Each structure stands twice: as structure tokens, then as C-alpha cells.
Image (cartoon, rainbow, N blue to C red; front, side):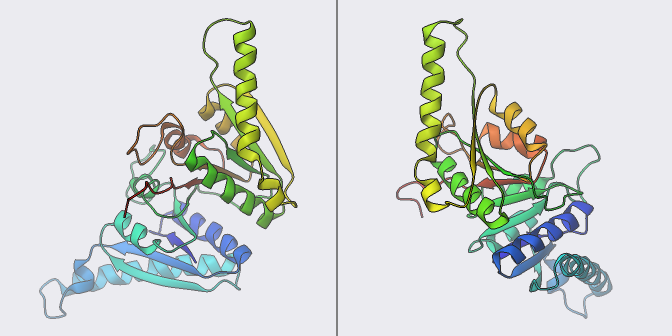
Length: 284
């Protein structure tokens, strides 16, 4: 099952359309979720504010209807299940996606300020949801470009590789595995060459075994001396999907979101999927 959060914004409708194509490709159902304040769903018809509650419920239902219609336009084969839930949208979506394959959200909702690069709901669910989260911009098609995955050798990066290989196979496109690093400022010479060789081995080790699992996916390796955010943002501008882990090797324990994934939420040039870090031993 795939879950998509909608709020009536253009980005949310784009997310619903993108999620519909993803659900069709996977052959699964799509849960279309809208979260609103809980009180209009709980208020009695005898309450003095019953008319206000009814008006808010009708508006929320219209948002859901518009999103379901967008799903039908994208692919009428997809079974879309509308759900109107009460509570904070971030908590609602995280709970709704507890057993999902993927959570899809728009990058910017109705409540954001003009000029903001990312909405509070998108930022609030990435790194906290138990499943991968796709952040979709408006407008956003389901382009046929290659899938790009950021490789850093971290445990979270392993999850990103698995998602990226699966997605490339699903779409019938190639996979570009990008490893970017910033070389220490020590001048040239043997140390710089050794550093490049270490990074080359890291990429090779991270990719080991994946082509055997997905022999249909053509892999292009890209090693680049540069900041990962800049390199991945540039590559994403001509790609169909960018996949990264929520935390990298250099992040502090306990962080929900690493600096690279956080920056790419704002600057990726295509739909972005952030895969969760593995649970720590002993965590519930």
C-alpha cells in the first residue's frame, strides 16, 4: 500500500498524481489521506458550532474528492481509498503510513508562506516515518529519466540503494550511483590520489551484490570530488527520481535527518525519496 497526503494545494494534487502512477506500477492500493482538526469530526449536531463543523467537513471531503479524481485521471486502474482523519497532519500521516511501502507528500501545502521552499508537513514526516517518503513538487510528472541514488557507505544508504534498484527495475530505466566527497585541503600529491582510491573502493563495496539481485538494471557509477548536495542537486535536474538515505556516515547518533538529505529536500530538481535509517538495536 502507498499513502499520499493531500490538502487541496497544487503540490498535493501533483503528489496524488505521482502516487497513482507509482501504485499502478506496483499493482497496489493507494490510501488518500487528508488530516483536519479533530473537533469538526467529533462535534455534536446540537452544538452551537455544528454548522461550522459541517462546513469544514464538507470542504475537507471536497479536497479528498479532487485528489481521488486526480488519481483516476492518472490511472483508472488504481484503487484509491479516501480517508478523512482528525489531528495534526504530520502525526496522522506517520501513523497512516506505519505499514505502508511508501508515503508521498507535496513539498509545499496550502498553509505555507509564499517563497518557502518546503512545507512544514513534508519536513515533519521525512526522517520520522517508518517507510520511505517521496516529496513531490508541482508540477511533477513521472518522467522516464534514470533513477539516481546517493551513495555514502552508511547503513541508511543501504536502504536507499535497495529502494533505488527496485524503482529502476520497476520503471525499466538505468540507475546512476553517485558518490561525492570533499577532498581534504592538503594540496595535490599521493595523499589526494589515495583519497580518491578510498572513495572508489567505498562505492564499489556499497554496490557489491546489487546487480546480481537486479540484473535488468544498468548501473552507471559516478565519482565526483565535490559537496554531495551540489553534485546530487545538479544530477537530479535531469533525472526521473533521486533517492537518498535519511542520515549519512558523518551524522550524530539520534538525528532524524542528516544535513545532505535535509538540504536536498529544498534543492532537488526532481521527485526525491528519503529512506529511513535502520532501527537501533534494542529500539522499540
